[in-house]
Length: 237
Image (cartoon, rainbow, N blue to C red; front, side, top):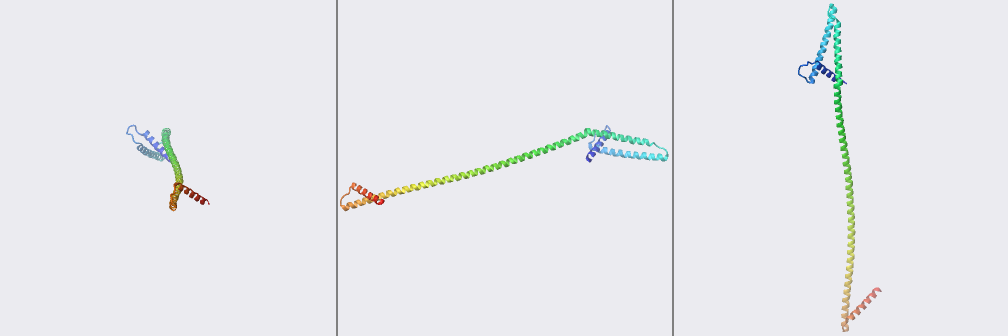
């Protein structure tokens, strides 16, 4: 409220200066005009006070001296000054209401609209940044889940490959053992057969020497068959 009254007084002083300034002369800036208007208004008030005081002294002197101007003339001058001030105030109020205040309110409204737009833009940028941050956090969380899933799958694949390699190694080891066992059994049988054949030959030669006669191949075969039969029978028993 005080600010509006101050602006109103300054505007009133400016209008008074504009209406009361002479046509000729250099233009002044608004601050100088306002200061000049205030000074002139103060001077006018002082002159009015002196005039009123002079009229009062004149009236007082007239009362004592029995002469001087009539008090009605002083009242008319005061009334004219008041009417002039009211007219000027009305004109200034009209100018302020129709020209100045709409410009001021339009400027304030434009400033408020600009501030609201800036606030809305800041809020939109803040919301956009928040949405981008949430999207980034969601993408990061999804990437972590996918990475953990890939890690689990890799570990499972490694465990499966390790199990397959172990099973394959066990199979190959068993096959090698079986083959080695078969080879050993075959070599053992071959060695036994060779030893048995050598023993038969040795026994045959010894028997031939004992009997002083040569043992033929058929005799060797027959003796071998008989020996095998005896060995088979003894093993069955």
